[in-house]
Length: 369
Image 1 (spheres, rainbow, N blue to C red):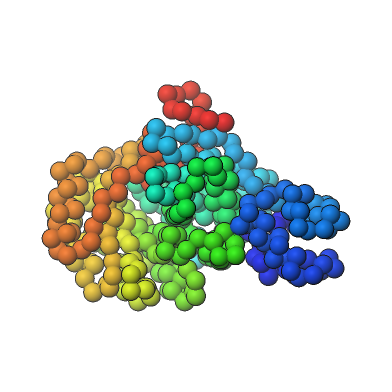
Image 2 (image 1 turned 45 degrees about the horizontal axis):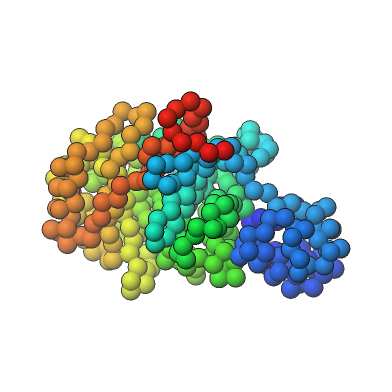
């Protein structure tokens, strides 16, 4: 039985089933998530006999670090192996569940340190089914959903490796491989542990879930008592443009998507973020900017993050500095809070849209193993 990813109540029940007091589950929960102890023999507040029994009957499995790629900006891209082949049920963009068996999967996470905080970008699926045309992850297709433990491990592993240099604030963004809202149950099981002050203990304001626009998932997320912040991967200024760049738009067009965003609850200081990847000569014109500003009207507290496209093996080009500045200026003039975000880790294929399991065996990139 795998322990990583189990909730506090599940761990309490596990202990009770083995004749131990339920509070032993609380101790185990704290050891795994707050203290990041992954060797059961080192959970010294548990009785020795119980530790030995757990070691025989359960496992705590972290992904295998196949490679670490160190960027010149200090970011680290982790290429992670997720273990043996297994049967799984994944949801496609039509909301249909398909059960099939796949070979052992790999996935990526990115650790980005800065003076004030560290940000960890994590994946929720191996590969992705959404098929955004400008994203290299889409080229992989959907391999499988990640389990709650596999999602949490992408946070726990970098935090433990960098524990000597951590700042007090950790941000987590669900912006790696996959569409989080197509793996809803596992993602939210992980989020409840991540946001539990007795678990990993992050504040909801420091965790952001990014979606391509799965409207039923947004509506479901809105009903959660504790949830991460919401970000929408917009990337187009009208339906015709978005149908081409993001085929998911044909199922959930802008009208439905924006209505779900309008109704999404938020605190007095909380925004719904719209991410807009600027593609040179495609969606970065002045008219695009004006249309985006019009889309934001009457949605409540929103902001727009402009993300210049990061190069890869796809037929797009980076926007010019002139078009970036023009787009940004128009949004501000229209009263829309806007920020230009330059992705980190571009030199090691760790930036937004670049995660495609690329392995480098002979290159000028810094590789630490």
